[in-house]
Length: 632
Image (cartoon, rainbow, N blue to C red):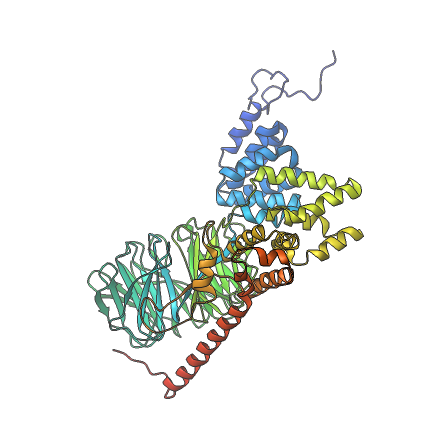
């Protein structure tokens, strides 16, 4: 037999296979060899190993999926590209579903992105499984001012009332008011911060040059920190809770001992007001933000200036440290987030976010950056890749400062309409289908596209499906088709997939099922948990609750977030299909509730408009003489 010229020579490494290895050669051992190279610290070896992994079937694909959580950004990007270019969804469905079920949030997001890229018709349906889904689920009525903050254990949210010198502590689980702090506080509370142990609350006001420290357990004022010559804009505790930093309109940062209330040091160097301060995760660096478009980094041990970060073209509004304090994110009115190397002071990345950045916070794993834009849009960005993960579809009118809960699952945003809006990050309402069933039914509908009119009829019938995800898939598959029957069907279900089944049930005079479907829709819109009594919620908080801004724990309403246009659509549907229907009048159900929504919504918003006018008149009267500074 002729000698095979492609055989490895003595001493060469063999990556595996069935060919016997030559004497003295190093055998890396097939799939085990791939695993060995992936375990190395070298990116080039890992990438080469991922290339080889594709030759080992399901075991190899598992290794590529695992590489989505590799510590190296370069390796993660390569794994993602490899999957998008080579993976066949249908043949590897079980493996992908297992990864979605058991993977971390970032891996789940990567797999969802992969599925959307490979099967675009699934994009809307997969949002139910998006680990970074954004949903506004609750509104606290104020009037609130300044920022808001979560307690370290996440069970409480603190907020400040603008007109009544009052701080409120809310239960984040139930949405009920737990306690209030009112002694010696002025209006226009600017900044609130919990100590890491949750036992102390630091408060500063735009009308005072002092800082108050409160005992959160007793509600008693522990101490008053005096030293600034003008009003204080921001306060922040060090990670160990022993130090408090404050930034002021007097252009200084002051560092305080929280145990004694003594002033440790004053940091000078800014040429304008200091608007925000933040400690690094290890407490060794303090970042301060100034109206002069710069950020300064200070050594907390010595009080010396480490570096001044310049590069923003407009004022900086917020900063947040990323893992181990080695990177700082800054958000500015120049519509960018800039990422800085805190060791060198160099600019490492610019994220174009499409709007002024008002607030920047990080999830606990320090991988996801949440921002609020000036147009009210909330965005989540991946700190490693610099990619936009998700964006709220509807803006918040006049969004302001934002806080994130310790578990990273909730955002609290103070808005200039005097409210605080609470948003959930993650799965809000799971689909009525598990992912396996969803994909099986999707592939069946996709194959039906090739089956002529009978197949189209099958997809059209899915527009009435009980599962919103299947209705979304049917809409997506049909949206680009020009057949008359398809066009007619899509026009008939003009209210988008969310309302398609409700319309079908109303047209069929299946009133009881229509009522249940209406409640399901409102639960999805509100972000309330499954099983909540949506009618009670609507009656008490969204429609019929009369707003009263008088002081006292019983005078502040808690509302679900349901837009009036959604209730108008529901009311319109019920009204159009229930008129002159004998079967409707025969039903002894509370169906008339939905018919009254529009009228009550109009009353509610007129009441809110009257409140706004009253506040404007109050401001003009109260501040006719100008805004003085109280330095007590």
